[in-house]
Length: 177
Image (cartoon, rainbow, N blue to C red):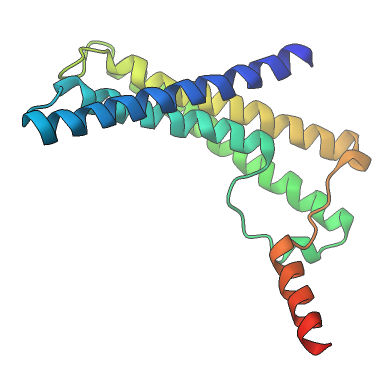
């Protein structure tokens, strides 16, 4: 568990570093284009690929934190057992989709093994490998959530009415008074 938490701490730090790199390169390119009427050719590729990596790595963090976009208006009205079953079904679907993503990404890495990016000369297989990492990590997290829901249902976090609904309800009560 300790190594598990260290891995996610590393991911958080790595995301911050990538964000900093992207901001520096975009800012530098804007200044160079605006002031000197020129730019760095590599800046666009670095920014683009950093953004793609941040997206896929951020998806891992969002899965761990349970922060992916979801429509839970119906689910949060279920009793605990219904929410548990719903969670298992959703995580099985996520696991299937991450398996498809990972297998497809492996094929892309193999197919693009000789191709390189135009400016930086990075192998496309390196760029596509982030999909494999993301698919595997999200799949493992989905398995963990399924395991917890089945073996330790008492640890399952109930979906409660979100704070926006509570705010509207509280505002409405204040107006009535």
